[in-house]
Length: 294
Image 1 (cartoon, rainbow, N blue to C red):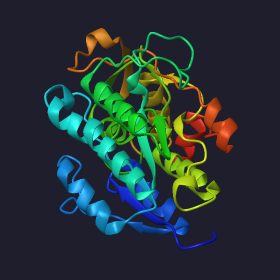
Image 2: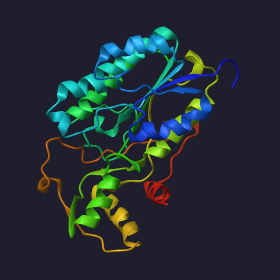
Image 3: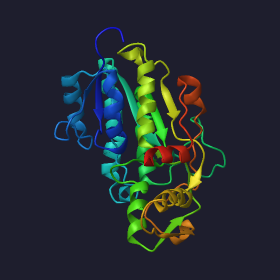
C-alpha cells in the first residue's frame, strides 16, 4: 500500500460481523474501534464530532438494530440506528473524503420471487427491520460518494445471538424442536462476510475517495439455499456426531409459529455482481457451516 496508512473506523465491532472484521481489517490499516460512550448510532448527534476527531479514510459500519421482532415495538430506535445514522455517516464521509462500507439485509425484499434477488430488483420489506434497513440504504445512496452497501442474509457466527447458537443450546435442553420449513434463504457465516469485505478493501487503489472504485449495492452471501428447518437439520446432524443425545427435529409451517414480524418466504440473493466486480465468491452454506463448526 502506497502513501499514508489507511485510517479505518469500525463501527459495531462487538456484533457478529464486527467481531470478525476486527481481525480481517487489522492488516489493512490502523483500525479505530469506538466504545458506545464515544459513538452511539442511536444518538445521531454523536456521529459528526467523533468522525471529525478521528478523520478516518474508510468507515466500515457493521452496527445495526437486528432484533427483527422487537423492532415492531421499537420502530423509532430501529430507524435511528438502521435508517438515520447511516445517512449521517455517509454525509460526513463524503465531506471528509472518506469511503463507506455498510451492511444491509435480504429482508429488504418481500419474498414473492422464485429466483435469487439481484441488486436492481425492487425492495418491498415486510417488517420494520427491513423497512429501516432499506431507509439506511436509500439515505446512503442519496448522499452518493464512495460507498458500498453489502446485502447479506441469515447471518450466524460463533458468538452473540444467532440461529446456530440457539439451535445448539436448545438441542441439548429439549426433546423436540419445531422449526419452520417454508421460509427459504441462505445461511452466511459472519467470518466469510468479514473476509470478503477485507478482500474488497485490499483491492482498493488509494486511501480516500478512490478507495471504492465501483460504488453501489452488492449482494454477499453464501451459495445455495435451504429453509430454517434444513439449516437446523444440518446443525443437529453435526451435533449428533458428538457425545450425548440431541433433540428430535420437526418441521412446521410459518402459520404454526406466530411471531410479531413477517418474514419473506424466499430471500435468496444473487451474488453474480460481486463475483464479476471483485472476484469474490463465498462457498455454499453447507461448506461454510462445516468450516465454522470445525
